[in-house]
Image 1 (cartoon, rainbow, N blue to C red):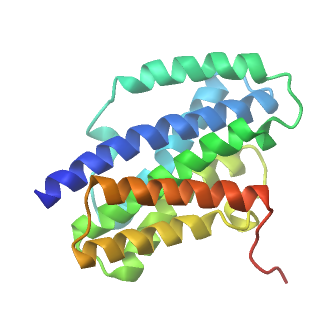
Image 2: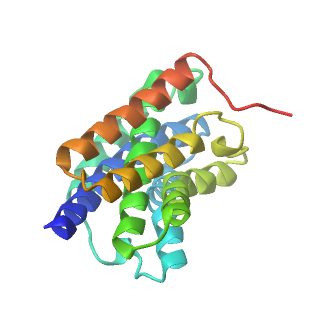
Length: 207
């Protein structure tokens, strides 16, 4: 029963995170004036990059090779239209649309990484590592491709959110409180934290 819950949570969070990250990457590509192929490559690598790194680290077959969700086609088409409408806006990547979609992707993939670690039986710090890597791996690839400093290196509460998500899910698992409602609560709390941190410019201490 528990494994079925984790399987369903991985499936849902993978779809939500993939579409959300694709949305933010269409906006990045539009601002950088990339062509359609460039935007698709950027979106694909960001949506799948963190998961591929996670699966390689854990010795699992890449998740993207085991499924091809039909929702992606619809989602990417809609997001392409959205990017086309927004591409002339200035400061696009700092609009609330970008922050919201990027935050959803961050939280959804953070949950995916944490649950993957829990199902594999890794220890606490392993769960944190997989949550962080899955959440920010694709974004790091995206930022490097467009010649920018990865958000996780200077974005304050960005990678920190993924670590907190991993810790929360591990605690729920150990307490036997993991269920759809608790996972949804962790998702909502993580997204709220990311949005509040951006709104009030929270950041970790800098040297």
